[in-house]
Structures are given as structure tokens and as C-alpha cells.
Amino acid sequence: MSMRRRTFLALSAAGAAGVGTSLLGAGQASAAVRPQGAPTTPFAVGVRRYDWTRGSRPCTTYVYYPATGTPGGAPVTNAPVAGGVFPVHNFTHGYGSSPQNSLFIIRALASAGFVVPAPHFNHDFGDVNNGNSAKDVSQILTNTLALNAGGPLAGHIDTGIGVGVSGHSLGGMITHGLLTSWPDSRIVSANPQSCVDMGAPSRSVSAKVLFVHGDRDSTTSYSSARQAYTEISWPKAFLTFVGGSHTSFWSDNHFPNTVVDWARWTMYGDTAARDRLPADAAGSRTRWEAVLG
Image 1: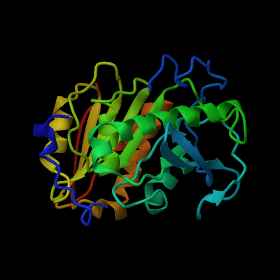
Image 2: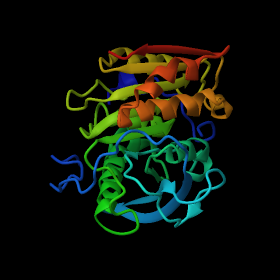
Image 3: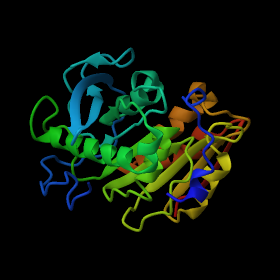
């Protein structure tokens, strides 16, 4: 990443909260049947921990997924998976945070019918800027897709539709990096939250991208995220929280509602979810922009 782009980042420790020719990255064919439309009712949420690595780099990941049981409540460890075949949509947390601190968005995605690998990183700014963290997420996506071949999630993961990526702050930078400087061509849906511009869009990625940012963010530059949005020619949208800070939108339902419907449209082909997006985002302190093609 060029120094010009790095200067947009005003992040501090105190203030911040391997692509192959197949989706699996190993030439494996899809073993799942693609979902027939988006789920119409919410699921309970289960979670399993996987202590993965990429070389010597730890990639501990909590995989959240639709589970049997009554919707609502906290994720249940090792709960039985619900019936169905579900797309993979990653979420990467920000500096000093964790998947458990990001359940307000992870649980919304899993409940709506997504398998959500959420790595727990000890974030290093250098590793985000040099691409190591983006490569870690690519490996985690490969490992998550491989769960379809055996174990409790076998037969429940859609390995043919592509993958989604999302994340906040440093996680948003990693997400944007996977579209630009360290591209993963499997990505069809992306949601960088409170990110900065990590590079020019890669021609190897064809994704629909939703940016979310507060325009009074003093940690990651709103203008840098706007630059990233302008550079993208793919179907795209930008949800601005007017007067919003780095994290203030976490407690605003416009945020999960818009993110979930974006994921439903871009990964399930749910056109009703696409048509709900302007209403999802509409509010007295929000601004919605979209070029959906």
C-alpha cells in the first residue's frame, strides 16, 4: 500500500476499537446444492471454535452458523446445525476487539442464514498494511469452506456460490485489502465498515460492495473511505451515519438491517432484500447512496 493511502489512517492503540482456482483453493468440487432462495424465517445461532494456522501464524476462528432451536438469545456452543445449505460470509473485528464483542452484527448474519467465520486476531498494524492479515482471512475462508467435506457442518455449506467478507476498522481495512492489494477472487459480497482505502480495485475480484462509515469518525478517515468508494466500478453502496463516530452506529438498527439485506441480495439473489435497502438505510441521521447496475 502506498504511503499516500496510509496517511489517511489516524488509528491508535487506545482509540481503535492464497486464492486458488476453486473456492476451496485446492481444486475441490462443490459438494453442496446451492440454496434455493433466501431463508424466510430466522434461525438460532450456534458456534464452534477452530484453532487454525497459516504457517506459523495463528488463525483462531469462531464459526457461527444457523442452528436448530429457538431463534434469539446467545449463540450456543456446538449446537446442531439447522437444515439447509448456507453461504459463507466472514466478519473480522477491529483493533483490540474480538468476535464476542461483535455479536450484534455476527449474530444478525448467522440468524439470517449465513455461516460466519470470525477470526480472533491479535491485530498488528504492520501485518494489516503488508497483507499478512488479508492472507490469513483468505486461508480462514478456505478452511471454512472445507468444513463442508466432513464434521458437524458437512453438507451445509455452499461451496459454489462465492464468499462474503466484512469487518470493522482494522477488520474493514483487511476487508478492503481483499478487494484491492491482496485480492481474493472468490469474493462476491463485501462490507468494509469504518475502513480506509487500501489500494486500487483488483480486476480479479467481482464483488458487490457496501461501505458503512460515520462522517465524524476521528479514528479512520471518512474521506479515505469515500475515495475507496469512488474508485470502485462494481455494484456498490455507501451508508453514511451523519454525525456518526467510529462506533456510534453499532447501536443503530439501520446498520444490521442494511448489512443483512445486502448479504441476502448479493449471496442469495434475494431481490426483495435488494428492494428493501433504501428503507433499511432511511433515517434522520443517515444518508444512502447506491449504484447497483
